[in-house]
Amino acid sequence: MNNNQTKLKINYKMSYKKLWKLLIDRGMQKKDLQKQCDISAASIAKLGKNANVTTDLLIKICSGLNCNLADICETERINTGE
Image 1 (cartoon, rainbow, N blue to C red):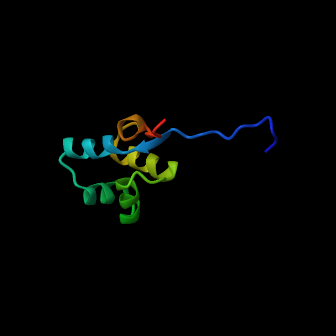
Image 2 (image 1 turned 30 degrees about the vertical axis):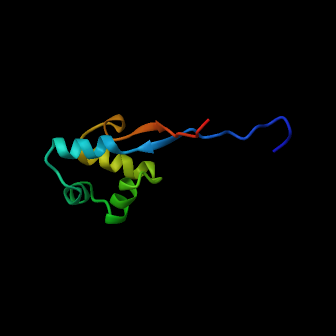
């Protein structure tokens, strides 16, 4: 990186609260999501921690639940204390 470039500061993180709310609205549990979308328990755990997951996983969930990406996730501002 040269002197004219600045490092991009990331102020947002992914949140999957919408996914959990969607499951509640549909009367589903995480194990139902796992079976219906053919995803692993490890992937469910990552989603539960708002950890990074692949777009392939998100598309699999959208396909399995017949919904859009905006229905299951959103970005949240990180409180940087600034």
